[in-house]
Length: 68
Image (tube, rainbow, N blue to C red):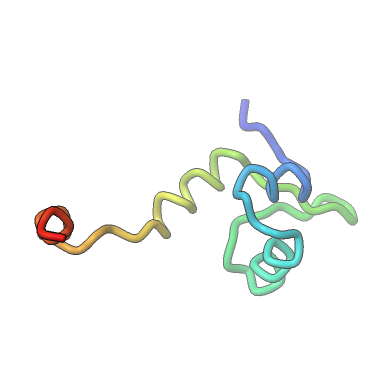
């Protein structure tokens, strides 16, 4: 079953501040559910969102780092 997280749980999961979480939600930049007056986040959707929004290092970055 897909676990639904509260705002507090999602903040801890993503390691962001509560204002950041509310900003992402209000701008509809992060997937969420509105259930009555409560906001819930799917743990699976947050993981997928993180995967889509990750930054991939530039090609050859590893080699450049070794030269330092």
